[in-house]
Length: 417
Image (tube, rainbow, N blue to C red; front, side):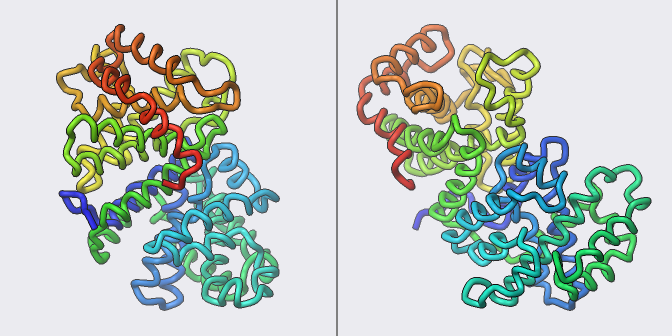
């Protein structure tokens, strides 16, 4: 099984990619980590071993892996018991259950918005006692964070008794009595709440990474994890279903025919899968706007590749992946965004990914139009190349392999990759 040349610790990759999940909060980008910290601190009060408290942190950090939409995030934070909350929990379950390193989280994620009065009566064949407790603990501290969100950085301590009282009022209905008792004990200490401040969150994360077991990921594992996150991104808008999968497949196809090493073809495939991570921070109403964007909306959209870079840049072994993904809107003439990199500083891999991104977007069926034909896609690409917006040599290579390139771009719609 192939591995990336600079070994990537799977835990580091997962922790970094969790930043992308938190981007959905737009102005609040630490929800998952705060839920994880509270869950782990409750686990310590229960006397759980370190491995179990670390699992609770990881579970809290990834519990909203099924959330792509900023509107969904808003409802989950604004309403204590939103009637449509189960949809994202079910999606999270489906994303996690087939990925062995994270599959233990699947069932707790599935039930992390299920009331205790229902969860406690479910058959053990559906959810074990341990899984029910894990799910309900995440539900409890998730609701704590939702109620606390308006007060972080200002007057949180003035509202603690109100928040704790609300949780206490859910004993037996929303939450398991013993878990409410654990939370009440853990949250008595001021330190419990101070850990949720931005500076403390980073220290908490660094401590877990420093003391956790190293797990050197294979390329197959990294690719599967990247596919999971590409699904999250592509589900954000009805316009972009399977886009990242198609871009990754097409980029690899072009790279292989450009004589790029197998090692870099692997890395470019990962970059293609993750290139639009930053779009998770773009509000739904902008991403799905049917008409032309105004200048303010365009500036917001133009931040997404920088956000992708911020998520990927600190992962060991991802140094080139981060740049290739971040540069997918850079143009050889220096007129792209957000870095305005010129041709001499754009690697062949970055230039390939840009062509693949535009090609796939044009070829893919969208709700508002059918995908362009091979001829129409090629005409569009050549126009951009003539303007200096695309590498003409890559466009020419695509032109020579047009049927296969088209198949690579759109076959992801019926293929799980």
